[in-house]
Image (cartoon, rainbow, N blue to C red; front, side, top):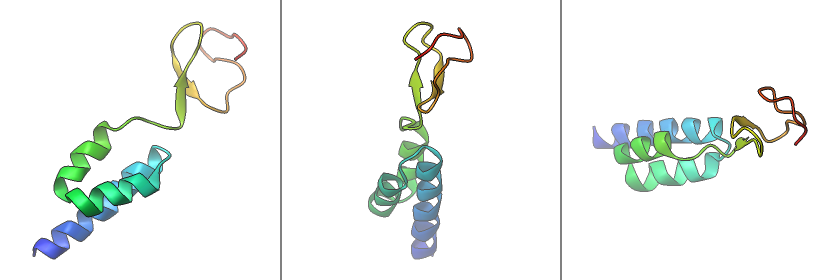
Length: 73
């Protein structure tokens, strides 16, 4: 039973990490911490977005122009 819960925790943490741009750390957190790792993965930072220099809105790293303030990054 515990083994199944641990495997599900690893898979969930890996999926959350992948969505946030860092699947390896999600896998490691899930493997080491199990169900507690899910909570940590949810509250971890998003590596795919940055703050705009001018309006502080979260934008994708690849963005050239901020969709909020229309300024070039």
